[in-house]
Amino acid sequence: MIEVHTLTYIEDHPDVTITELSQIWHKTKSALSQVITHLEREGLLTKSRKEGNAREMRP
Image 1 (spheres, one colour):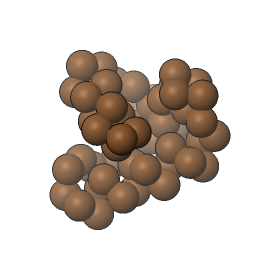
Image 2 (tube, one colour; image 1 turned 60 degrees about the vertical axis):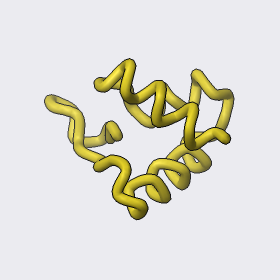
Image 3 (cartoon, rainbow, N blue to C red; image 1 turned 60 degrees about the horizontal axis):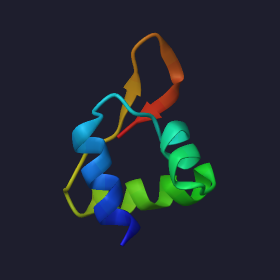
């Protein structure tokens, strides 16, 4: 269920980062990263580095 909510949130807020998602959903960054990786493997989204900050990833 978190995957559907995550996809919907990303669609509404395309510049959100994995860190921000983890704070919104009250999950660890690791847990959200696993969700994002699973969605990426399914071909539902792609991850990219945030401009100006190579350490932050955004889905």
